[in-house]
Length: 232
Ligand SMILES: *Cc1c(COP(=O)(O)O)cnc(C)c1O
Image (cartoon, rainbow, N blue to C red):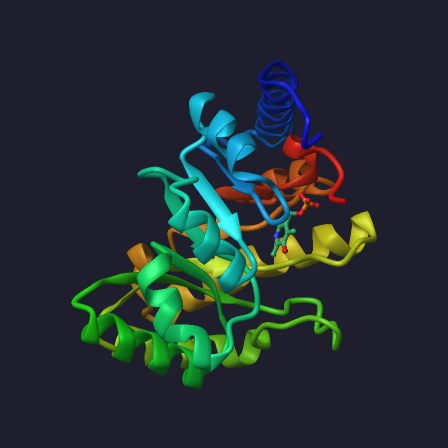
């Protein structure tokens, strides 16, 4: 809906909010659940409309595309999260562009982000991306590696660990198992002494599976198509 009206976007946002409320009610959870608007492939004018509607967290999965949009002022003062696979050679730029990198999945990338953050006098929030379903086609650390990576990140200057992120398989039952797996990994890390602040966010759920994710404990859903329509 690149030609899309603000009315269409408002209706989509309302539908997502209702879906969140239904899922919270079904599961007896309280929330809140934050909505991160995924703007890959979405033009700056439409991003500005989303901001007018009160969306305050955006996500991009390519560093270059995000840089262009930041240059154009598309995100204003909103939070911008990186949700794609980060290559070490882009870490320095990422540390400057993003308020949070959700996709940290190796000590190498964590170290590169830390060094860049220190160099620029910035603090970069990070989440660990976990490949809960062990899908060889997906990025992320295995659940077994997550404890060591969390300890490593907590020891680095310039980074603040805020939670865990996952991308679930397409099948709804497999998705539910993955979301449940991320929530129980969070509990395991807490019991191993990782502080609660570092595990506050569970970033899980996309357009096709966000209600399941909310039922299983998501604190932040990442919605692209459900807000902006199908990508070209
Ligand atoms: C594209 C993307 C999303 C949003 O997907 P939709 O199906 O459009 O809601 C969420 N998370 C990540 C990591 C993505 O790359």
